Image (cartoon, rainbow, N blue to C red):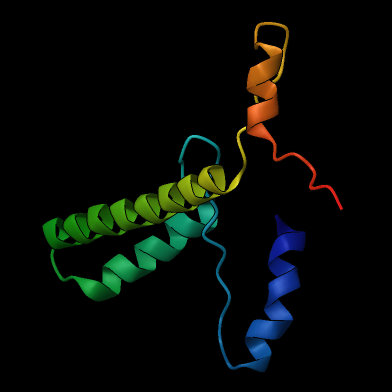
Length: 102
């Protein structure tokens, strides 16, 4: 994790920005850096405990939605390849484009 963060630090600093990695584990759990950053945002964005919790819930929902959109885009961008002994040979031929003759 430290190596990944360090790769972006120089670029962010050169632009006058601060880099904070918002990592999510497989399954959607936010990493420690993300939790700390959200705590800082919540303390600035809201005065009462209930407002902070509402803001945190909203922020986590947005982060998870963005993550799921990214995963869906990745899955949809990959071609479907049906292979294996249970797939008829004709089905495999329809999945991949045939080379064009010259």
